[in-house]
Amino acid sequence: MLVISSREFRENQKKYFDLIDQKEQIIVQRGKNKSYALVPIEETVKYFSEPEIMERLERSIEEAKQGDLVTVSPEKIAQLLGL
Image (cartoon, rainbow, N blue to C red; front, side):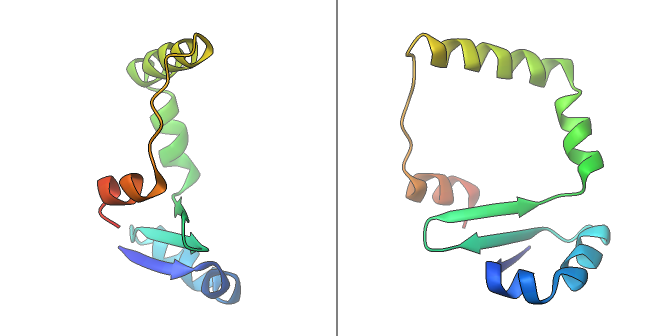
């Protein structure tokens, strides 16, 4: 897995898209508390086409509408993702 800055990504997009095509995981950091994972669209579409995943997302959206939320800090998310 590579973690790069948004500036590095902007300057070398082709390089990173080629690495993604070779199954390399790329995380783009934007500032101190924002990170984005770059994935090929076919993986994302595949993920959201799974009935179990869609059911869980719909259930989560409904819970959020009802106010049943848990706040998680950016630091905790980074910790959970191993960043």
